[in-house]
Length: 324
Length: 82
Image 1: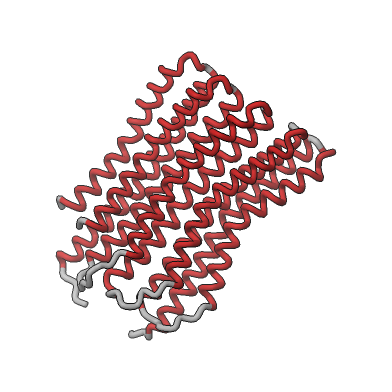
Image 2: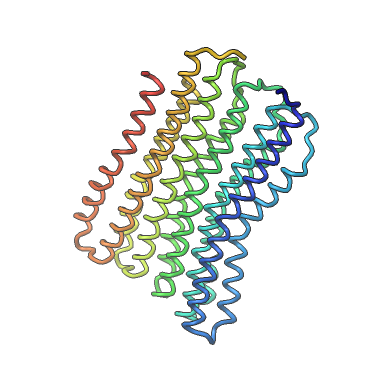
């Protein structure tokens, strides 16, 4: 049974679009549910402030929603874009774009819900700190949107760059691997960044004087938490833009696909782990600000160890791309 | 496209290396993060014991790291030895 390239490209675009929106909807919905749950708790604690809490809930949810709006945009583009030169290579690029944006929206969606929810709860505890809590909520959720934005960039490159004259085999695997690498590694960083952001809002509400120390350690923790998805972005850029020699064998393609799988899944765990470490440190700086330097040091040492597995995954990816 | 036996075996080894290192990195990453979070909590509660707590955290993380290193070893074996 032989298919025309047009048919295969349509199949790839529709499957990619479905994966993109289906998986992309998971995260934001969970994150927004968490925000709403804590907003309810906050209103029941202090119902006079229900107006402020309601406003914060909506702002927090709107940020969490943006990840899944990116997924919606990519899914709609995949369904309706036209492809001037249909080729099998483009089919694999479109599937890769769907995977990248779908998984990429998951972590950021869940993560952005944590600062939103904790800010609502914080307003009910410390109404005077409403402004500062909103600021920290916005900074915290904005940082945890970055992995979704990286995934969006990779998806758009895969969809709109013309990979015209490169050999089909093994480049198809490189493009699919680029999507897997970026999409999966974004899950951990998005989720982890949100944990740190949530802890900062909780901490400010508990102990308003610590606001500057808490914000500093939150930003440092979130920055380290972003590194696994930056590794993912790096590997996916190499996979998209390096020229691979033409081959008829199967193994070079599988090496490139394997590079994407290794970095994608390999970035997931360290991203979440770095976020946990940051959450613990931020939470306890708010409770024991005198010892913030010890806490910062412990957080960074712990994150560095947790990061090592992402570095192993990156090494294996680079070996698969450049050596074997 | 004709595919030879040796080519399929190599292809399987490459994709296997990717899966081994990728999935193998998830657990240690999360586990070491948990250890670090709890170490921060403990130092926050009892700052005088910071040195002891950091040592305990590092030993615990080293043990958790071992599975990540097993994955790395298996991935490298798949790439270069078998």
